[in-house]
Image (cartoon, rainbow, N blue to C red; front, side):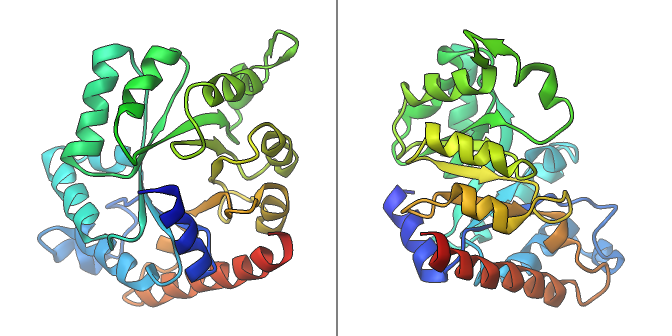
Length: 270
Protein backbone atom coordinates (compact mmCIF):
# COMPACT_ATOMS: atom_id res chain seq x y z
CA UNK A 1 0.00 0.00 0.00
CA UNK A 2 1.25 3.47 -0.87
CA UNK A 3 1.71 5.98 1.91
CA UNK A 4 -0.85 8.30 0.31
CA UNK A 5 -3.53 5.61 0.52
CA UNK A 6 -2.80 4.98 4.17
CA UNK A 7 -2.97 8.70 4.90
CA UNK A 8 -6.26 8.97 3.00
CA UNK A 9 -7.74 6.19 5.12
CA UNK A 10 -6.72 8.02 8.29
CA UNK A 11 -8.37 11.19 7.02
CA UNK A 12 -11.50 9.40 5.80
CA UNK A 13 -12.10 7.35 8.94
CA UNK A 14 -10.73 10.01 11.31
CA UNK A 15 -8.80 7.22 12.93
CA UNK A 16 -5.30 5.82 13.29
CA UNK A 17 -6.44 2.67 15.06
CA UNK A 18 -4.75 -0.66 14.44
CA UNK A 19 -6.52 -3.76 15.74
CA UNK A 20 -4.23 -6.57 16.81
CA UNK A 21 -5.51 -10.02 15.91
CA UNK A 22 -3.74 -11.94 18.70
CA UNK A 23 -6.23 -14.76 18.51
CA UNK A 24 -5.87 -17.35 21.27
CA UNK A 25 -8.06 -20.47 21.30
CA UNK A 26 -8.03 -20.36 25.10
CA UNK A 27 -9.53 -16.84 25.17
CA UNK A 28 -12.09 -16.73 22.37
CA UNK A 29 -15.76 -17.32 23.24
CA UNK A 30 -16.32 -21.00 23.90
CA UNK A 31 -19.26 -21.34 21.50
CA UNK A 32 -16.87 -20.68 18.59
CA UNK A 33 -14.87 -23.82 19.38
CA UNK A 34 -17.62 -25.80 17.66
CA UNK A 35 -16.77 -24.11 14.35
CA UNK A 36 -14.64 -25.88 11.76
CA UNK A 37 -12.10 -23.03 11.96
CA UNK A 38 -12.75 -21.19 15.24
CA UNK A 39 -9.76 -18.85 14.82
CA UNK A 40 -10.95 -17.61 11.45
CA UNK A 41 -14.57 -17.37 12.61
CA UNK A 42 -13.48 -15.23 15.55
CA UNK A 43 -11.29 -13.01 13.33
CA UNK A 44 -14.06 -12.70 10.75
CA UNK A 45 -16.54 -11.42 13.33
CA UNK A 46 -13.96 -9.04 14.83
CA UNK A 47 -13.20 -7.64 11.37
CA UNK A 48 -16.90 -7.25 10.57
CA UNK A 49 -17.35 -5.41 13.87
CA UNK A 50 -14.34 -3.07 13.71
CA UNK A 51 -13.53 -2.37 10.04
CA UNK A 52 -15.47 0.91 10.09
CA UNK A 53 -13.21 2.32 12.80
CA UNK A 54 -9.68 1.07 12.10
CA UNK A 55 -7.13 1.63 9.36
CA UNK A 56 -4.93 -1.42 10.04
CA UNK A 57 -5.03 -5.01 11.27
CA UNK A 58 -2.03 -6.68 12.86
CA UNK A 59 -2.07 -10.46 13.24
CA UNK A 60 0.62 -11.57 15.68
CA UNK A 61 2.12 -14.42 13.68
CA UNK A 62 3.13 -16.46 16.74
CA UNK A 63 -0.52 -17.12 17.61
CA UNK A 64 -0.96 -18.79 14.20
CA UNK A 65 2.40 -20.53 13.94
CA UNK A 66 1.71 -22.24 17.28
CA UNK A 67 -1.27 -24.03 15.72
CA UNK A 68 0.78 -25.59 12.92
CA UNK A 69 -0.66 -25.94 9.39
CA UNK A 70 -4.20 -25.17 10.60
CA UNK A 71 -2.98 -21.87 12.02
CA UNK A 72 -1.37 -20.86 8.75
CA UNK A 73 -4.63 -21.68 6.97
CA UNK A 74 -6.56 -19.51 9.44
CA UNK A 75 -4.07 -16.70 8.91
CA UNK A 76 -4.37 -16.84 5.13
CA UNK A 77 -8.16 -16.85 5.28
CA UNK A 78 -8.07 -13.90 7.68
CA UNK A 79 -5.74 -11.94 5.41
CA UNK A 80 -7.98 -12.57 2.41
CA UNK A 81 -11.03 -11.43 4.39
CA UNK A 82 -9.59 -8.09 5.49
CA UNK A 83 -10.95 -5.30 3.23
CA UNK A 84 -8.44 -4.27 0.58
CA UNK A 85 -8.27 -0.64 1.70
CA UNK A 86 -7.14 -1.57 5.23
CA UNK A 87 -3.41 -1.78 5.92
CA UNK A 88 -2.12 -5.18 7.02
CA UNK A 89 0.82 -5.85 9.32
CA UNK A 90 2.53 -9.20 9.78
CA UNK A 91 3.77 -8.92 13.35
CA UNK A 92 6.51 -11.48 12.79
CA UNK A 93 9.65 -9.67 14.03
CA UNK A 94 11.81 -11.36 11.45
CA UNK A 95 15.48 -10.50 11.02
CA UNK A 96 18.17 -12.70 9.52
CA UNK A 97 20.91 -12.30 6.95
CA UNK A 98 20.75 -12.24 3.16
CA UNK A 99 18.86 -15.09 1.54
CA UNK A 100 16.95 -15.95 4.71
CA UNK A 101 15.48 -12.45 4.96
CA UNK A 102 14.70 -12.55 1.25
CA UNK A 103 12.70 -15.74 1.76
CA UNK A 104 10.90 -14.26 4.76
CA UNK A 105 10.00 -11.27 2.59
CA UNK A 106 8.70 -13.51 -0.20
CA UNK A 107 6.63 -15.50 2.29
CA UNK A 108 4.86 -12.47 3.75
CA UNK A 109 4.79 -10.14 0.73
CA UNK A 110 4.19 -12.56 -2.16
CA UNK A 111 2.58 -15.68 -0.76
CA UNK A 112 0.49 -13.91 1.87
CA UNK A 113 0.37 -10.35 0.43
CA UNK A 114 0.79 -8.45 3.70
CA UNK A 115 1.44 -4.73 3.30
CA UNK A 116 4.14 -4.71 5.97
CA UNK A 117 6.18 -6.77 8.38
CA UNK A 118 7.83 -6.03 11.71
CA UNK A 119 11.60 -6.47 11.54
CA UNK A 120 14.29 -6.90 14.21
CA UNK A 121 17.34 -4.90 13.01
CA UNK A 122 19.98 -6.36 15.35
CA UNK A 123 21.86 -8.13 12.52
CA UNK A 124 22.19 -4.90 10.54
CA UNK A 125 21.69 -3.69 7.00
CA UNK A 126 21.90 -7.01 5.19
CA UNK A 127 19.09 -8.39 7.37
CA UNK A 128 16.81 -5.44 6.53
CA UNK A 129 17.45 -4.58 2.88
CA UNK A 130 15.82 -7.69 1.32
CA UNK A 131 12.45 -6.57 2.69
CA UNK A 132 12.84 -3.22 0.91
CA UNK A 133 13.05 -4.77 -2.55
CA UNK A 134 9.26 -5.10 -2.80
CA UNK A 135 7.29 -2.18 -4.21
CA UNK A 136 4.71 -0.57 -1.94
CA UNK A 137 5.66 -2.87 0.93
CA UNK A 138 6.80 -1.61 4.31
CA UNK A 139 9.18 -2.64 7.05
CA UNK A 140 8.38 -1.70 10.64
CA UNK A 141 11.64 -1.71 12.57
CA UNK A 142 11.74 -2.35 16.30
CA UNK A 143 13.09 0.86 17.79
CA UNK A 144 12.05 1.48 21.41
CA UNK A 145 9.69 -1.00 23.03
CA UNK A 146 7.79 -0.92 26.33
CA UNK A 147 8.67 -4.32 27.77
CA UNK A 148 10.91 -4.46 30.87
CA UNK A 149 13.69 -6.16 28.94
CA UNK A 150 13.98 -3.16 26.63
CA UNK A 151 16.40 -1.78 29.20
CA UNK A 152 18.84 -4.64 28.58
CA UNK A 153 20.02 -3.35 25.20
CA UNK A 154 17.94 -0.55 23.73
CA UNK A 155 19.15 2.18 26.07
CA UNK A 156 22.81 1.17 26.19
CA UNK A 157 25.13 3.93 24.99
CA UNK A 158 26.44 3.78 21.45
CA UNK A 159 28.74 6.67 20.52
CA UNK A 160 27.35 8.57 23.48
CA UNK A 161 23.72 7.99 22.49
CA UNK A 162 21.20 5.28 23.38
CA UNK A 163 21.35 2.34 21.00
CA UNK A 164 17.75 2.80 19.84
CA UNK A 165 18.66 6.28 18.58
CA UNK A 166 21.56 4.86 16.56
CA UNK A 167 19.22 2.22 15.11
CA UNK A 168 16.69 4.86 14.01
CA UNK A 169 19.30 7.10 12.41
CA UNK A 170 20.93 4.19 10.61
CA UNK A 171 17.63 2.85 9.29
CA UNK A 172 16.58 6.26 7.98
CA UNK A 173 19.65 6.08 5.77
CA UNK A 174 18.45 2.80 4.25
CA UNK A 175 14.88 3.72 3.32
CA UNK A 176 12.59 6.71 3.06
CA UNK A 177 9.36 7.37 4.95
CA UNK A 178 7.33 5.69 2.18
CA UNK A 179 8.65 2.28 3.22
CA UNK A 180 9.96 2.60 6.75
CA UNK A 181 8.05 2.71 10.04
CA UNK A 182 9.25 2.24 13.60
CA UNK A 183 7.80 0.36 16.55
CA UNK A 184 7.67 2.70 19.54
CA UNK A 185 6.00 1.56 22.78
CA UNK A 186 3.07 3.55 24.12
CA UNK A 187 3.96 3.59 27.79
CA UNK A 188 6.71 6.20 27.41
CA UNK A 189 5.20 9.23 25.66
CA UNK A 190 8.36 11.21 26.36
CA UNK A 191 10.30 8.76 24.19
CA UNK A 192 7.73 9.05 21.42
CA UNK A 193 8.24 12.81 21.37
CA UNK A 194 12.00 12.36 21.32
CA UNK A 195 11.85 9.80 18.51
CA UNK A 196 9.45 12.00 16.52
CA UNK A 197 12.20 14.64 16.46
CA UNK A 198 14.57 12.03 15.00
CA UNK A 199 12.07 10.70 12.46
CA UNK A 200 9.62 13.53 11.68
CA UNK A 201 8.10 11.95 8.56
CA UNK A 202 7.93 8.25 9.46
CA UNK A 203 4.90 6.38 10.71
CA UNK A 204 5.14 4.80 14.15
CA UNK A 205 3.43 1.57 15.11
CA UNK A 206 2.56 2.10 18.77
CA UNK A 207 1.55 -0.94 20.82
CA UNK A 208 0.62 -0.73 24.47
CA UNK A 209 -2.49 1.48 24.53
CA UNK A 210 -5.33 0.03 26.57
CA UNK A 211 -4.61 -3.21 28.43
CA UNK A 212 -0.89 -2.38 28.72
CA UNK A 213 -1.48 1.07 30.19
CA UNK A 214 -0.42 3.46 27.43
CA UNK A 215 -2.20 6.84 27.39
CA UNK A 216 -3.73 7.65 24.00
CA UNK A 217 -3.79 11.41 24.56
CA UNK A 218 -0.11 11.55 25.52
CA UNK A 219 0.88 9.29 22.62
CA UNK A 220 -1.12 11.37 20.15
CA UNK A 221 0.22 14.70 21.35
CA UNK A 222 3.79 13.40 21.13
CA UNK A 223 3.58 11.45 17.89
CA UNK A 224 1.02 12.80 15.42
CA UNK A 225 2.35 14.56 12.31
CA UNK A 226 0.87 16.04 9.15
CA UNK A 227 0.12 12.58 7.67
CA UNK A 228 -1.24 11.24 10.92
CA UNK A 229 2.00 9.38 11.40
CA UNK A 230 0.70 6.91 13.98
CA UNK A 231 -0.82 3.45 13.93
CA UNK A 232 -1.90 2.93 17.52
CA UNK A 233 -2.51 -0.73 18.23
CA UNK A 234 -5.04 -2.21 20.60
CA UNK A 235 -5.35 -5.98 20.81
CA UNK A 236 -6.76 -7.46 24.02
CA UNK A 237 -8.71 -4.32 24.89
CA UNK A 238 -10.81 -4.74 21.74
CA UNK A 239 -10.88 -8.38 20.69
CA UNK A 240 -11.41 -9.72 24.23
CA UNK A 241 -13.80 -7.03 25.40
CA UNK A 242 -16.27 -9.86 25.96
CA UNK A 243 -15.99 -13.64 26.13
CA UNK A 244 -19.69 -14.11 25.45
CA UNK A 245 -21.79 -14.20 22.29
CA UNK A 246 -21.87 -10.40 22.26
CA UNK A 247 -18.09 -10.22 21.71
CA UNK A 248 -18.50 -8.64 18.26
CA UNK A 249 -20.73 -5.86 19.54
CA UNK A 250 -18.43 -5.19 22.48
CA UNK A 251 -15.37 -5.10 20.21
CA UNK A 252 -17.17 -2.66 17.93
CA UNK A 253 -17.97 -0.39 20.87
CA UNK A 254 -14.37 -0.39 22.10
CA UNK A 255 -13.07 0.35 18.60
CA UNK A 256 -15.58 3.15 18.11
CA UNK A 257 -14.66 4.67 21.46
CA UNK A 258 -11.00 4.80 20.44
CA UNK A 259 -11.86 6.18 17.00
CA UNK A 260 -13.92 8.96 18.53
CA UNK A 261 -11.04 9.89 20.81
CA UNK A 262 -8.61 9.79 17.89
CA UNK A 263 -10.84 12.08 15.85
CA UNK A 264 -10.55 14.65 18.62
CA UNK A 265 -6.76 14.42 18.69
CA UNK A 266 -6.45 14.63 14.92
CA UNK A 267 -8.30 17.92 15.08
CA UNK A 268 -6.26 19.06 18.05
CA UNK A 269 -2.70 18.07 17.12
CA UNK A 270 -2.51 17.79 13.31
